[in-house]
Length: 64
Image (cartoon, rainbow, N blue to C red; front, side, top):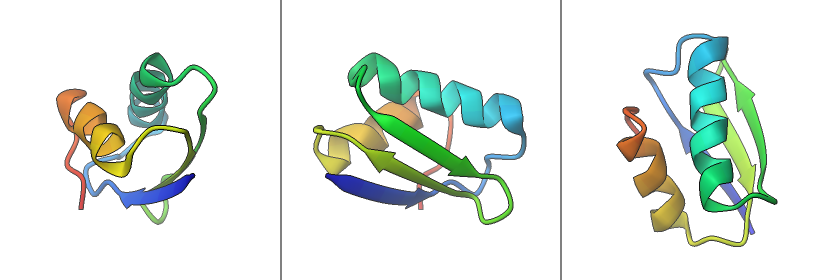
């Protein structure tokens, strides 16, 4: 399942790495692509949208 979320406070490569690691702890097979310019993260995962968004929030980021 593909999920795309906007993360307005994702500002740098370290932010993108933290978000990617948090998602991959939830689903080790998840594919995560972060675009710092648009602040969008595209995720291919088997997990439900709300679970993925919750993990991102728990990592300290805002999900729009």
